[in-house]
Each structure stands twice: as C-alpha cells, then as structure tokens.
Length: 345
Figure: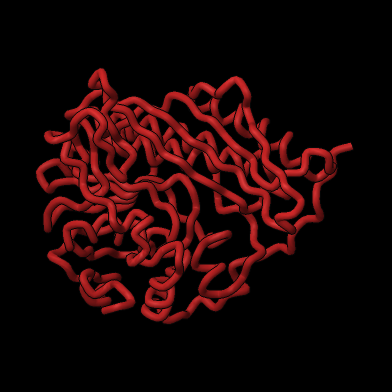
C-alpha cells in the first residue's frame, strides 16, 4: 500500500509582520548561497548571448548552443526537493513548468525531458508514493506543454549509507530555437526601457528563499501554481516574441521579483525604478516565488503595441517601471546602485 507522509504544519503569511525593513531583507538575502551575486554558478554571472559570433560547439551559460549541423538548440536543468514527500505530482508539474517558462523566455521551443529521482527507496511505501506521484506529474505536465517524455520516465538512485536526505527530482529539458533572429536575452538593454510583469502577484511567500533564509521558516506549502495558467503564459510569450515586442525577458524565480530584476540589471550595470502593487504585501510582491510570472523589457516606441496586444489577449500584466542608469528605486525610495549590490561592496 502506498502511503503519504504526515502533512507539514500549515504556514500562513500573517505569521510574519507586514511592516519590515526591506533594505535589511535585501542585504541579508544577498549572502544567501542560492542568491548571492558572488556565486558564479548562478544567473548573476550570465553573459548576454551574442548570436552573431555563435559557432559549432560553442556553449553559453544561458543553455543555448549550436549543433554540428548549425541548428540552434537549448537545454536547461532544474532540481526540486520541496514537498516531494507531500505532493509529488504538483511539485513535479511545477518543476517542469519552471523549466519550460525559462526556455520560452529565450524564444526556444521545449521538445523533450528526462528525469532522475535521487534518494528514493522504491521498496519503502513513502518512496512508492513519491515515485508514483512524480510519474503522474511528469506525464501530465508533458501532455499540457506538448513535450516528449523519455521512454524510461523516471530513473532512481538510492544508497542507504547516505543517511537521511531529502528526496530530490532533477529534470533536463531539451528544446529547439526556430528563429535565430528572435532570441530574447535576459539582460536589460537600455536606460529608459519600460519594465512590465506578465502574470499575477499574490500574497504568497511559500517555500521562498526569503521565508527559509531570512525568517528561518523551513516548513511551508508550495508557492501558488496553476498549470493551465502556465500553458497560457507560454502561448502569450510566443506571440510577444514573434511580434518582436520584447527587449528582454526573465521568469520570476529564486529570490522573487527583486532578484529577477537584479539578474536582468547586473550584466550591463543597469538599475530599475519600480512601483509595487498596492494590493499585495510588499515582502510578498518583492520576494515571493509564486509561479506564472515573467518580467519583460519593452522599448518606449513599442509600449503601445505591447499594451494593445496584452489587453487583447486578456492576460494579467502590471507596469512595474523603467530601467535606470544604475540606481535601484522602489516606491520612490532609493536602495543604492546596482554595482554596490554585493556583500563585498
């Protein structure tokens, strides 16, 4: 019989005071190993893609590369350990959606996925529960996103001498890039470009770096996630890229909106001036990791076209602000300059 582990203690946002020092939160999160700019394994160190100089065999940290026959391909790898023991299906669907969203932002088409479950004892009822849920999540997500799933859907790894460790699922997503000229990179391009967020913000900080690192709350639910909204989001991004309306695109990921904006600004030294959503708590707006959100840059000359298209598509979007020469401003408050946003400075 397959059993589910006992549910985690329910966390609610009202357990955290709403009035907080945002600057203190930011500079504490800067030393989070999963977010720190000095961690050269993460997105902060990504260089912009120079399509004109890409050649066979050349790789890029963005995951876009050229095959021997000249076909541009894309690849991204993601891992997740949150909540596999409690809701493996939704956790796996969320992981696939996250990988797909990142790939779609570059103008790539997700094609196929493979997966690996680590630290799963398939002889144990809880291991069976996780494996069965993850398999169902993979199959459902691949059907929703029209992605091929490798014949052997999940591979397992278990070694008892490792001791108690979190079950983890790792997926690798392969995609194709149909139009070299339509690639959209993650970094801000010019001062004065408008910044929009596509998708909806929520009063949600579940399983975020902010909640776990800053508040040291390790037990919370999955972040807000709706797979059908993710499918719609990808359709919208494909149309925006096809119309050439975007100068940059970034999925909101680890660290929430604030760190997504940092990832966009750091390569070129640009900052941002944004206004938060008055309907959402500021900490959740800036640091929550709810799914289904993408930050895009739009040049001033195309803003009307962007707004008209988005309004017609009837998809939530929010005018955040604009790209600055280097200063970071939130709700008319200065947070310094982006070149100082490292623990060393």
